[in-house]
Length: 553
Image (cartoon, rainbow, N blue to C red; front, side, top):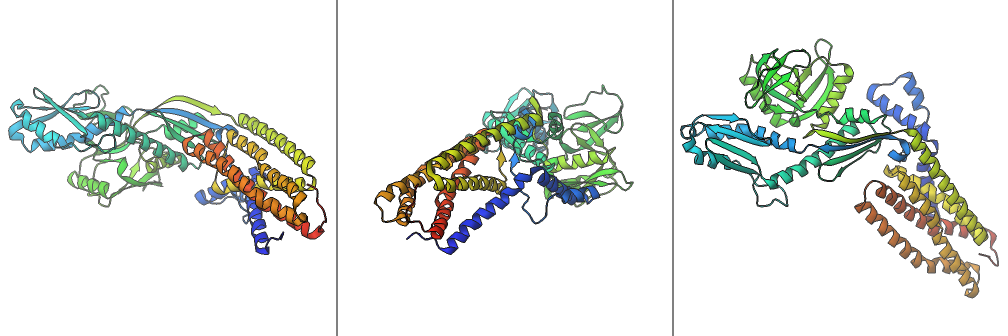
């Protein structure tokens, strides 16, 4: 018998109402976006009359989630960066030098004095004064090697050690270089993502391309230069021992030393030990603040390992200066007045409030493991995005009108029910995109247009089946019931195969392909729901009220 239980009707219309409610903010995009930005700014810096007025642009009780617009629709910044992965090799060698020095000092009677000498990039060269102890020295240095942590390098060691005369040369093995490259790229992508997320941008695209390149696209950002300023700074913070201070820019540093300029004292240079006492990688937090004189500064805190090293160093070097180095520039070189336990401190300098805030953001996000070279940069203006939106809107309207006209002419009243369900279907798609925080791109609009065309397929199958059943079934009620029952398997089969394709595109694709697959997959879900349940509720409700003796499909 043609009947739908009351609880099922309530559930169906409840889901429809919920989906349309979440889709509603997209019809008032500018107002809702203004409201959301004001709420975020109030939470960050406090309320002002302007922000309160902007917050009132949209009621607090209504949903305020929006479908994010991609770079091709909203405009924004596009960068293609190349990561200088070879820089990490030298950092590894610099960090290894103290271990090599300490290991050889324990057998000084056999190898003599130990000194670091000039070496090729990415290698460490150590000279011993007793060449006859070379075999013993090589044995000790090789003992510092560790297994390579990667699937492809299983069974290999990370160091290659060789000796020639009185010089030991240490470098990374080929397997370790491959594993290091992979880790460096993965870390760079994650750090860039954290830095971009810190400034509240919407749905950035950050993904690895090839061996050593990263694609960065941030919708809504003013220019590529602004994006470069945000992520181009490596923000490599280290705390180093000060070996000397000079005003001579031509001073030649010794092995393991570097001559760096002072940020707040033009013409002053510090000679520092390149092996850091503590690095920015051991920071757990950094917040903008003010020093005791009311000048902008940055408070920082180390993790337990960094706190221990920082405390031990300050306890052993009271009265000596130490350098706070940011991106190869000494931003501060205070004299250690007392032991600093707890692993927290403050960075002072000639900062503005904005500079201290940006520095804190960069330090919280972490240091990029290597420098980046920007190979390609583009600023996509909002006018281009608006043209794309207008073109997509026209395509959707044309597809919509064509489908509505066809269904109305082909199926009459039942076509009207299908058209109403199609309108609901599109609303549900935008509701789901808003709920999941999806991003709409030009390929995504193509997916919506395709969904509009496919959405009526299920209704066509059902209505054609009802037509056939009217010739044999006893009465219109039975024909409608059998039409839905017997068309169900064909509808499910057809949509499941298309949904599988959408999932494959999402998993294996990237960028535009994913945008298309998301809208296609969501469109399939909403199409099946509206065709099988929403149109059925409409038809059953109409049939119960009119009780027609015959029907025409």
